[in-house]
Image (cartoon, rainbow, N blue to C red; front, side):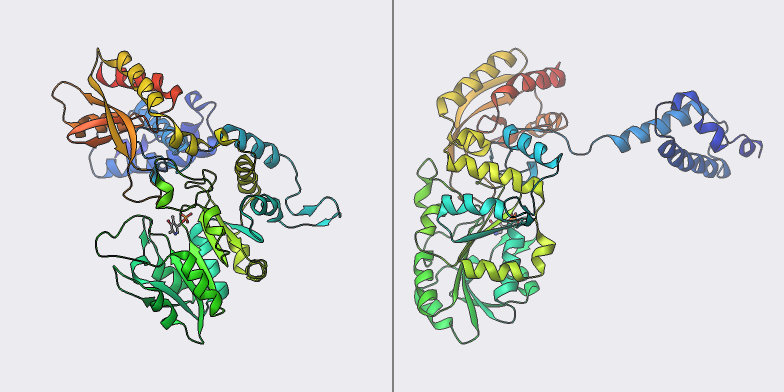
Amino acid sequence: MSLLKSIPKIDKFVSKSCFDGYSINLITKISQVVIENLRIEILQNNINEINEDKLVEEVLETYKELVAPSLQKVINATGIIVHTNLGRSLLSKQSLEKAIDIATSYNNLEYDLKKGQRGERYAHIVKTLQALTGCEDAIVVNNNASAVFLIMNTFAKNKEVVVSRGELVEIGGSFRVPEVMAQSGAILKEIGTTNKTHLRDYENAINENTSMLMKVHKSNYTIEGFASDVTFEDIVKVASQNEVIDYYDMGSGHMIDLPFNLSSAEPSILKIMEYNPSLLSFSGDKLLGSVQAGIIIGKKELIAKIKKNQLLRMLRVDKITLSILEDTLNSYLTNDLKNIPTLNMLYTKIEVLQKRANKLKTLIDTICKCEVIKNQTLIGGGTTPNKKIPTIALTLEYKDFKPNKIEELLRRNNLITRIENEKVLLDFRTIQEDEIEKIESIIKRVFN
Ligand SMILES: *Cc1c(COP(=O)(O)O)cnc(C)c1O
């Protein structure tokens, strides 16, 4: 029982000089928990002495864990450029610096400087999108999932939306087209079969309660073999003949043609705009290479209806988003593509990747067994599913360590690799020049 009496008093405990410089509020909160636990331990006869230095250590450890940033930098050596788990598209420093300038100052977010009256939040990116894509009008929301939801809710509440069975996708992180539709109030009208949908299926599905013909990008799968679907060009035609809306959820829309012949399979936003569609939506942080956002472009009267939907207020984007997005779109407009890291990585020549791989190899091959190999990777982020792009990788072996073990050791040092054919790979499609030396020091730290 005497031990209970020796439990430190909170006030006295937290005034120890070893807590100087820390937040007294947080130290007190943590100390209360630590000391309460101590009391329980004593009552259960689990300890027979009180070590105050140990208590201090415990408090400081918890403190440091709590205030350490949870979001950390990692090196993406997986080769997957738009890696959803690793933050999707990188932003350029230039775009971000502009955003810092805007966000740390008052600005004309919703103020018309010419007229001296309330302005439009979305106006800032409309002219750029018009110039780029030829769209009549545009709007930006929190992400593409909200774009889909907002469009459904605006035009198809209690009305039918015609979608091919082969396109009822689930995208990682619980975005399922049928469920999003149900939540929005739209009635899903499935047509065709899993592998085949014909133009006549769309035509036959249209009735007086049809609002829209929707196409959804098959972002993470392909259907091979006896399969066919209807092009968006044809869907636009049928929609306009029947006076219903056509809408393409493009997922990862891209502005310019893709390298490695990928564009034949995946037409760009500009190509799709030639069909004169009603509405398109796509993500800001997939292949477009910008910030998280959902971009909707299309006909003026339709965008005007969307603007009247109260939901827009809940899905609206901040000045930081608009500023970054504006800068990325401007880069497309002025053909300044080096300002878009995602495109830089996609277009980097194999010879450059080879050089980087050789450089790293010479830095580490006294520590690990490694070999530069030609390989293939994926763009990721729901673009061009199953289509491989060429890359260069460095294989890593260390003594008799299993690949899983090596992968884990590197991962715990924020170097994310991939394992292929029983070997750990560092893929240079996503490794930047200035990361080579960082990788060298991680490998030295891990294996020496
Ligand atoms: C990725 C994707 C979405 C969701 O976009 P977010 O920007 O992640 O919200 C919706 N539809 C398709 C087809 C997609 O590929």
